[in-house]
Length: 361
Figure 1 (cartoon, rainbow, N blue to C red):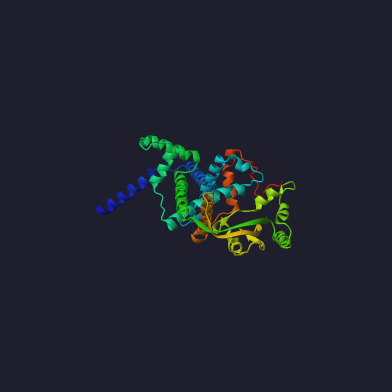
Figure 2 (figure 1 turned 90 degrees about the vertical axis):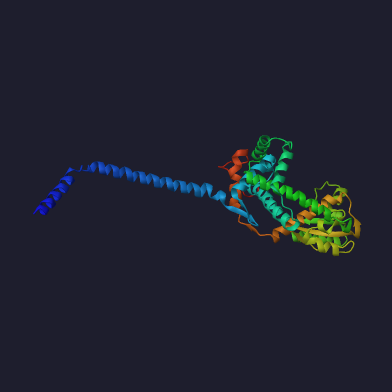
């Protein structure tokens, strides 16, 4: 009996507790739900805007446009290199016929060459540029004494980096490549022999294969080569100027375009070559051999040109032999230029960007 009474009292107590609870105002509840819903919508909109900004403004700049042996170059890196290039060469963007692609190509080629030099120097010459060498280069360029305190060097280093507009890692990448190139050229200098097989020849360059064929045939039929070549120059150009312009002087095989190398050195005196397409086929060259010597001495004047040719040939081989992945598009190049266009008052603006196609004179 007592148990039933206790159970009844407990039930009544719970009922009273429920009745005592404050009632929720339906209007207030609706208000809270409305505010919460609006807040959620705003948060979603902000999230979508942030995502859109990232996708359109940030992500494209992080796109890897070039990768050489694992070294990655982003579109933003290219853009900063363009800014540095234009800052150092203000007239570049104002040259006749300049386009966004022209400016971007110069900067892109420099970046690709830097990456090739760093990896090629290590592979072919065992040249690795230490961080201390980069610091020493900065000390020299900024005229910082070797015994200067760390704060003095840090200030000079920061100034050097800021002057380029690059990130610190990009600045060190560029400086590392510069040092590596210098050391590679020193190694190539050692490879220049005291004497070598050399040739002396004339070269006439034409825009089409048909023009080059006609010129070669005229020379073979006995027309004076200088008279034929003079047609490539302004009408009032003196014959002596034409002759000096088409004669190369004595050169080694390494100084001759790879496409024409074997042809020229296999020709006999006075022989005229068939047209040879150079590089991408935009130029067709006709050669006439006027001299060849097996062991002609290399002069001091020739040495720098031979080293330059050896270096260029080495870079061309690296392009084929190293792992090079080029993912850049013309749109990437134009956008990279557009990003810095207003900073330097380049031709056009963000509303009127630099032309992609060459300007018509």
